[in-house]
Length: 171
Image 1 (tube, rainbow, N blue to C red):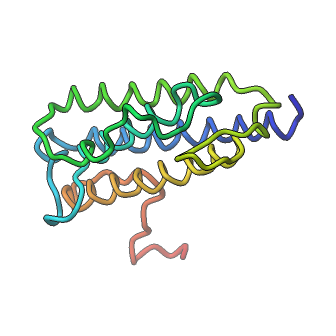
Image 2 (cartoon, rainbow, N blue to C red):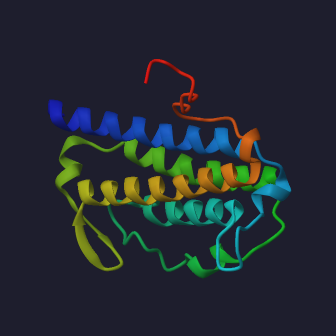
């Protein structure tokens, strides 16, 4: 593998691990009921986002190099149906999706990055497909953390750099 490709895959895997851990650190702060809380009727709750991300990963990363990334067996609309899934079940679904993603990306070779794959019958490079997934997962992890912070408010443990207090003289 060339140095660039090695570095790209390393950074991408690191970024996905960061997304996964950050979301899990947020979800750990929430009760089972809070995972099902929605800020409004048209919003998604965290449980739905977990099911959606896992469904996406099951579709994209199974037979990634050889089949369309939107599998015929995927029932995407079902991912957005509210249910009473336990926190344990949701975390199992979550981890199954991530396992597929990591198993696939960790086994890619340098020459795979320029190969063509399809997503919804549209050709794109493996590099584009990975970048699409980075953006998609980052977007939904941000939603998960934002919802969690709305629920826990001042009890939310900050997972990034906390804001400085107004009395801090090092501004």
